[in-house]
Image (cartoon, rainbow, N blue to C red; front, side):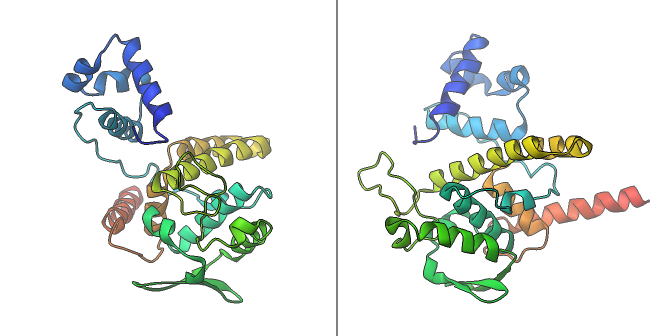
Length: 260
């Protein structure tokens, strides 16, 4: 079981035990019964299917669903609300990804020397080209100022370095994060954003914030970048572009049907 999936594995086992289902039952029946009993959404079924395969259960691959809703206000994830380094790192990541919606693997390997600061925007250079990223300067400067207070982070070449040591022998502060660690970081940031929105919302906006919170609870980084692509961000790689195009097509078609 890869590190980081243990909580999901335990929840999967608990759900199966409630229905008196063993490993052979799950392998034969899949997760349909659990999904009905727990009212799991398609994204949750896709996640637990992957977790089950990691645990040794031969389940069919459940496709990752398109973001739902297909248009979503992502700005709260890019807004600063404190000085905690983990929060600042996440905000900088989300702000960069709105203009440079690269896969997790690209952000994992992105180096500080590849990001240049101008008066109005950031410029990101890779082997595939150069991208101009507006709207991320405030988050970038806040994150850079924070990390420069810690020698290990200040010396790190990575844009999104590790903030603490992990269980691995080669893990260190300022080191390169794993893909799983970054995905976990995004999920935690989305949930913390939900808590902040609920704690600070005005009564007149409570219903709107609850709808946003519901969407954020199931938001993954992959969905985040596809939503950014669907909103018009320039493609960084082929991955996700087709899905984003489908999202735009469906949204346009739906608007046309409503108008008629």
